[in-house]
Image 1: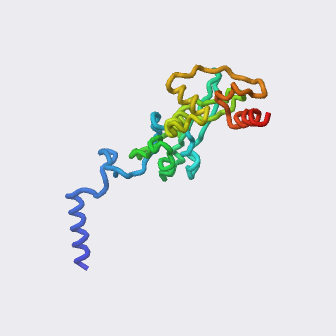
Image 2 (image 1 turned 90 degrees about the vertical axis):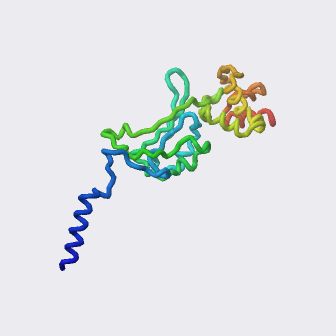
Image 3 (image 1 turned 120 degrees about the horizontal axis):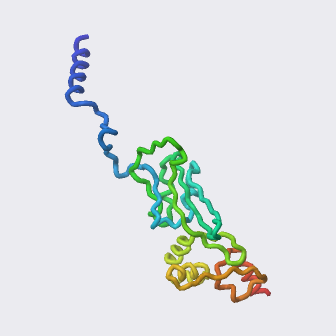
Length: 204
């Protein structure tokens, strides 16, 4: 019976001398592994707001909000609610640019109001010149055009987005007259209006 008590006494003295095995956080910064999956963060320069991260998010923590403001401009906003996030990394894995959203090492995410636990990124939306339907974000179209290279010239919407990026295209007035004419081919058109234009051109 004496040996176990001597062992416990030894462990108690050792703990007093060496201190606890736990980290000293929050008095001292915690040492985080490089592969630690912490708070997901959008990188505005690399995120093209394609919405892929929201499509694969298991808990549905990422919302894609599209709205038209009072001044007429349309915007797309990606809203990440990291109070719902399970830090699985699927958003980072599905990111088409591979740098738009990345899991950081931040883990101390406590807030008093859950409405503050959000991460957002926003960009202008391209809209159809005829019906006003939302197409995609400007950065997304420009990214696709750069990715495709010369092949992008087969799609007028991508061409206009690329030229707009270079400052070669002025803003065009909307058009509501139908049927669409051949001159409307070099306009930003949604898939429905583009199909209507092609059908008119091909079959009258």
